[in-house]
Length: 247
Length: 153
Image (cartoon, rainbow over all chains, first blue to last red; front, top):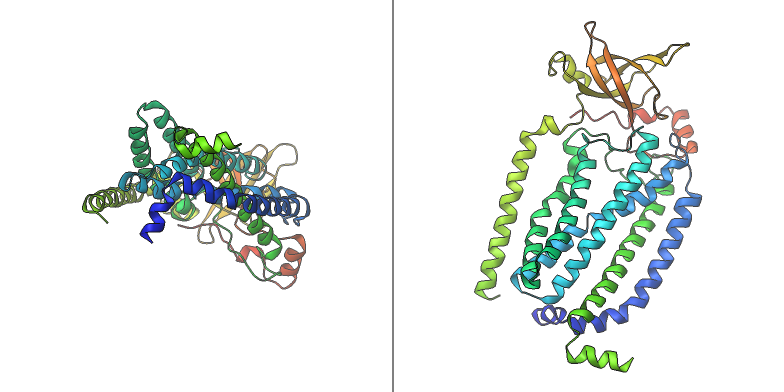
């Protein structure tokens, strides 16, 4: 277990292993994304009240759910950076923060679109779900700017790790905001196996496919950007030079 | 695990735990400030001071929507199935506004106990249904409203 763990910290080992996984992940992502988007945006039945506007939520729910995974990911990589000082953990963290900011932005944008039609407002400063999600975007932008503000890369890695660990609490607030407080945002829809009741399989199967697709997209993007990061940071090492001269 | 690493991990866990408790207490203390709206029951119990600008959230009571024919004025009653508050509003209502629907209205109480709303937003619940399922549910008497009264916390 410990051997495997320390091996994982080796950029070279990760580069080689991820190279083998990538084609499979990309293939799976294309399949799930195509099925999810075509089904969700073209064939999902209309909602009895919202009509076809509910189709926006297929994208919104999948991206929003996935965007909550970034801080837990940063918590794990940040802890590894601070305690075990693995370089790979910080490379993942750097790119996860940037990706997470984009995911948060798309969540807010798609939610705003839906809200403008259904609620009658784009944005409500008094809604704790909306504001805590915006806070996540700002926190991630904060982590990104903190890294670029600090010149020494090791100090930057430690500072970002600490901010990420502290910021993780916001995920809990986003998740439970709709239950703890009165909000305009609805609570999570409970799924139902019954085709004759609300939130039946006709709605959630397409959503589930989209969630898997977005998670695959996240994995592929993160692996690709981390591989770039590895090549850049390890450019003086022998194995990278061999790799470059071979191709 | 080496001792110095265990120590570092301990510090991180301590910071995270301490912060969670601090945020938890803050959130609990600010509960009413973070809430977006008051329920009709809270209004009836006098939790809102007079002359205060606030938001009220509840369901549009069935059979209470009265629209003027020559203007955009509309009167309706909002309820949380315990207390009712009459609301008057002039303006364009969101598409989702209808009887039995959750709404959030922003405005002030007037001297007659009528809430003068300057804005009305529609609240959507967590239930998604195709028109066929809705028709089937209505036919069997299990109306969607029974599934989700507006949050009353």
